[in-house]
Amino acid sequence: MKAEIAPDWSDTPTILDGAIVIGAGAAGLAAAQALIRAGVTVQILEREARLAEPWHRRHDNLHLNTHRDLSSLPGLSYPAGTPAFPHRSTVIGHLNDFAETHRLPIAFGVAVEGVEFHGDHWLVRSSAGPRAARHVVVATGRDRQPFIPAWKGMRDFSGRILHSADFGRASDYAGKKVLVVGAGNSGFDVLNHLAAGTETGQIWLAARNGPALLPKRIGKIAVHRLSPFMASLPTWMADAAMAATQRLVFGDLRKYGLPPAPSGGASRLGSDYTAIAADDGAVDAIKAGRIAVVPQISAFRRDGVILANGRAIAPDVVIAATGYRTGLEPMLGGLGVLDAKGVPLFNGADSDPNLPGLWFTGMRPSIRGCFANAGILGAAIAGKIAGRKR
Image (cartoon, helix red, strand yellow):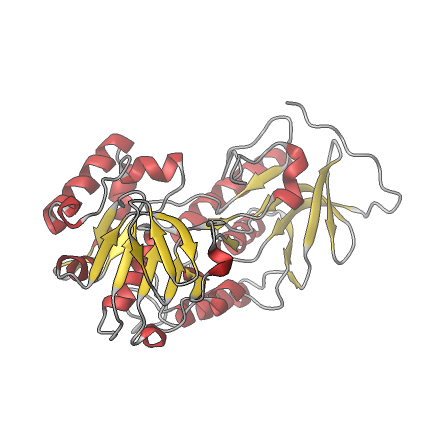
């Protein structure tokens, strides 16, 4: 569908013959640095007051599931002595170091309210007034808004319901009965922490689908270090390699109640953007009976949860590892570029010929991980934009 050109604004600003990058996370910073290196003038708009705000807000136990050597932004390594899987505080420092090293022009505290196509340029409506540019790169992230389903009766529940993004410290759950909902990457991250010696009460995992699950390490080898090779394989071959690894390392997890995955790990990355889960102790806890796998939630009641099989359990805390939303509808909903879940229909160097100059980065998971992918997509976008300027 060809986009309508928005009506002229009386206070249209000077058009930047370059790009406005919306979002100063890993994807936005990598794209901005690549654009500047390609000779493209850049403005970066960040709604928060500081860099890495989502990382500041995440739980204290959070570490990357991706190896440090494949989790840095282009041209900047982590400090010597950084653990293989960096802590969130190290990631925060890395993002700030990258922005300072490259003197990236970031305007903090600027919330973008809408993006409009004006034929030969884009108008960006923001809390700091309108801005215009030939190109707009949207890099606000696929994990912008934690999502919790509207379960029946959840308002009546006397316990606590929170999203996995607000997990906090594992010690906060000492003596508590905990239900984790979702067997994806976030769900296993929570289970890994709870299984690591925390004296909780009963732990349940409610799983609608089984995960594509890989161990963090096999012996002393960090499995993620193989991701560049896996990313080079055809999807069906990567699916087969992951499934074989999962079966060899963990055995048949269906024996412990985990349902089968609906499709292969690489296929799900591309079809429904489901990231691959990493095990660091949760599977052993499932096999030992410390974590019981149960069906998905049917409804809440005041004193507990009714499962899909009619069984009732009584957790003190329900942790919803139920994913995120991009939250892009208010900004871009009128352009027809989002799918039913609010995910952009194109990403990286791909674009819509009817909307020239609109780009997205960091909106889909990758086998390589978000940091490595940020560098790859940023360079691809910069190449396209610089090529059009010649």
